[in-house]
Length: 104
Length: 168
Image 1 (tube, rainbow over the protein chains, first blue to last red):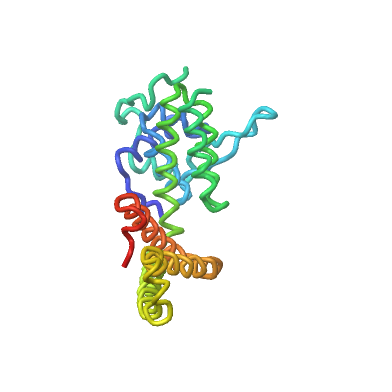
Image 2: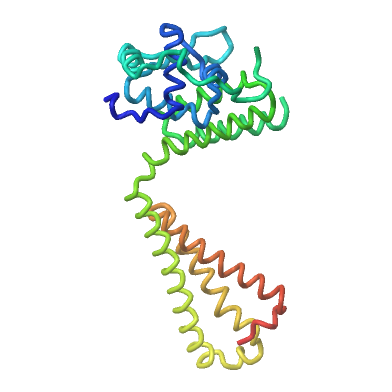
């Protein structure tokens, strides 16, 4: 199934970002900031990865009264696929800021 | 919250509402992330990108080629139907008026003209839209488009030539 995924440079960036902290859940905006991808590019990639069961998503159970945030991390198959593609974090391109004035 | 962020929120909210419930999770996720985007215009850019992504990803599923073809065919049928009504109305009234209402027509030439080419067809079209809307919406929309074109033409003509300019 994973072989059907078109591995664009942007997808490679996203996979590399997940590979940097494989077990850690990540937020969409944080991935956008660290990869330099805008929402219109990032989310289609996340959707495609999730459709191919390479990515799992979960709603964070945050503070009471605040709406939950969506978090993402690679599945076991996703990790295998990312590693197969030899996407070590050190090989990825240097990130550009996705949006000006991003919070620290 | 500034205006750009408000627009951003509304835009994404609107996009999420257009999605099927099963697909709306991704839109809700983008909407939630909006709270963390620093900068008003950056928030708007985030929403624009997100809405475009949702459209590109989910609309093709809902708007299959067959569905688009069916809707387009419906619209065309509606427009043709409206043109047919207009032609019929014109033909019938042009025959009817001189035969049955010759005196009235001579006295109210402008009114007779507009009655023939605008009023009667528009009434028929409105009735057609009302009856088609619940069952054949795409055809009804085609009729509405034709009716609006006719009424716009009428308004522009009257604005330019005056009411009496419509006499036959």
